[in-house]
Image 1 (cartoon, rainbow, N blue to C red):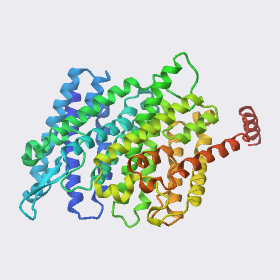
Image 2: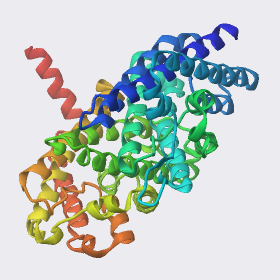
Image 3: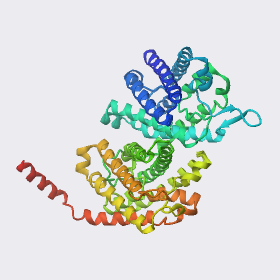
Image 4: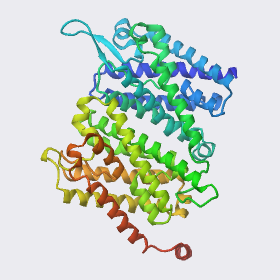
Length: 508
């Protein structure tokens, strides 16, 4: 235990020193996109640190992860307590090391890179507090930590997936997930004085103890938020389906009804987390002040879709969109009843996601991006409903043709493996998004929806112009599903494919 605890102590110390140095250095360079640089470097730092100590201690370096591991029975409660103590001591050591190497001006300006929700700044009538409200910051802490646990720790703690993927991909997923969440949390609020989510109580504790002052203001939420998220995540793992799907097809079993309810609940939670992360990521890219911010959008779509598909395909099939549930039902992959429950869960998940986004998003950003909703012709600067319908149909068919053809084929699924299937699905979605946002060149058109549930949530909550042409985001994808299903009937059957493969092998 003491060897593992020392690894956690030094690992957390290096993490705090590295992350706080990254924050300070990125803002000191005065580049236009410090948040993007911070997230990229945080991803690299977390990946390398976890990779270094995961064979020794499991690579927690975060009390939230240790709590999850203890509640899931992966480590004992006594070991977990020692780990948390070691992580806190490591964070203090990292903050002390940082204080020793930076000058007093940087210490004052950046508060040792600590966790803050507001600061005191000069105002027209004296000093004023600027930053986030406590409730907003707490929601951000809970949701972002839960999303991080969902898309990375869920995969890392699944023995079957961890063994299948290997140590390096798992560590990379942890690092990229952390960087992604840091990026969206520091961009979506658009509020000076808020330092982004902590997600790691130990990381926030070190600078608070060493620097003090306003770092103690609402410091409790950097503990309550992650701990609440950890407890919620563990509860979620108790509800998700017990069976581990090897591919998209779900077979009838004795406990089929029970598993269906569990899978539908998984779809609700997964869709909610996906749409929260995806919407905030897209808005963050557009607000990044890059010369061509739209070029970042497909990359964000790819990363977010990949993480969620990798996590949810073994649980529920990873639909998270009425399109995939509908085509799965047409092709007999799932029953019509299961598809109906999935679609209802996805729509409820969308509403929940955008309710949370509305709570944490800056008011000006909500107005500017219409809550991240699907727009056809905003302020008469978009496209006609006819063109939007054609785009929705075409781009959805591209996704189905490129990705679903492979993903729903059991033989090819097993040949390629889960990781490559997720790459293909996420890549097809990113390609479709990229084509739609550039082909029209119209600022009033928000691009294809590819997910009717994603368009429904903002329309219900915000209304207004989001209802103009809303029907195309349902009719287009469902028409594409019907046409694709007709096309799939012309494809060679399993036995015929095997004969063709044997003939091809003989020719070669």
